[in-house]
Image 1 (cartoon, rainbow, N blue to C red):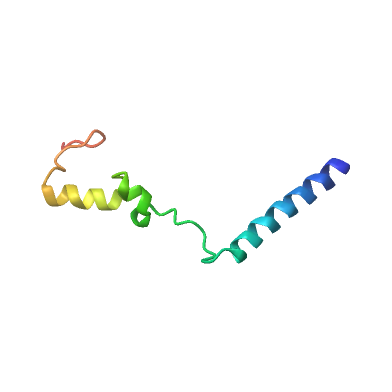
Image 2: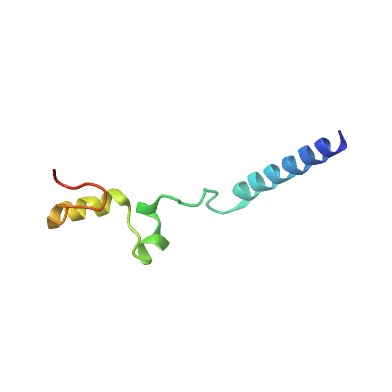
Length: 71
């Protein structure tokens, strides 16, 4: 029973500290995890899969891929 209470208290402290950190920070937002809008991902050349697919369609390089072949 003491292990359960200790775990519950530690989890409550963790959740409380994370929420306080969000409130105190200037912008108070969660980090942007979307690939298409994340500046750091774009700097590394990582794009959204949908964006890459649209680029391939425009270039005409979508004839064959490793998973699907014309039958």
